[in-house]
Image (cartoon, rainbow, N blue to C red; front, side, top):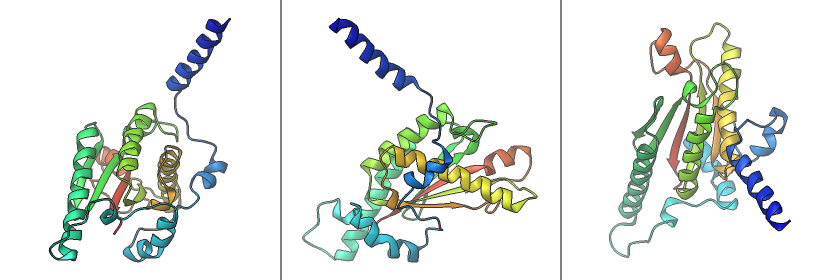
Length: 223
């Protein structure tokens, strides 16, 4: 009898591990995203949000590394930040060598570009099995490297209906935000925004459109 019970429990865990991810009901998204900001991640917005972020357990990068007892403090702090973000960039780059995904450096920021078809179902508004695997990798890395703010921005290709483009891009960004929240990312780190067809990174031809439909994660050091 005990063997049967053990076999049943193990089977349940195995089945749970093989279950395909689906975004939760949209009506529950505010619960998952409580603490996130739905605006552009400007410097002013980050400064304003820092007390909330720290109050929710957030850390600054300079608090994660051993302080130096010599030299100029500003120079030392800047070195710590550059090294931290450099290590984060390398770990993401090394872990995300997949089609439709790129990791780039922009000053001290790190940007992850996720083409829509690389993380979402082709004809359904939901995260794909491959996308869930990718976002799980990102979640695990961001949990270890937790001294960053995260802007999650959705983009579409050019569309005649700009309101529809805005709604679609916002949907993509929020889905990713919900996934990250479900996988242990502190939502006070998050800024979530849908930018529609603005800021294309490729031509608006058949191939370029696939690239312009994307979600970008911009990681900014918490100072």
